[in-house]
Image (cartoon, rainbow, N blue to C red; front, side, top):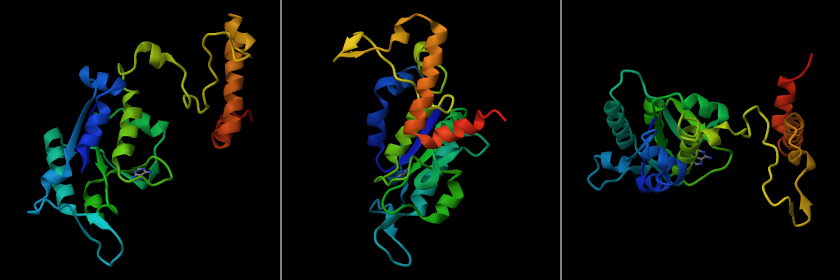
Length: 236
Ligand code: ADE
């Protein structure tokens, strides 16, 4: 997977991707992260990338020319005929979830466009963007953190990025439910005992208990997900 991140702050992307699991995945050439500075493409002699909004209103807008030329350079470097999926990270987009992460993990290249200031001129968005994606119903100062969140989530779905042990683990959202509670040693901590069934060695009972806990936890913490699960698994 090759990620191309169009940003005014490439150092924000570079500093975050070079550690932990993503860092290892880069070392092993399983993923590649190419942070591209949009400012490098401005034709303005003062290196300006923003301007006032037509019609008035507070704040500045990213101008179309540098964004377009930056996108063009990236697309040409990929040198493939089809249009590469270009994700504008914006609170106005579809909310990112595990299903979208799975879908995007099948792409060979992804371009993320990070906005700043009050946003980006609508005309260049119409030209280059294929997907408008948000990471949740709240507003951040720019698109870098949402892009990093998405790259992290997508990368762990790419074969080889997680070790076998890590990827074999059951995960929250795997089946539309939250994960059950887990315990490690010691058996008693602060007068709290590890649930008896987990010490029994009886695998069928352990699986049953875990499923029940997943159901219970989802019902309590995420009733919205529980309703979807119950509907999908209804016995008519
Ligand atoms: N930019 C600012 N806030 C955002 C959000 N919640 N999701 C994606 N991009 C954003």
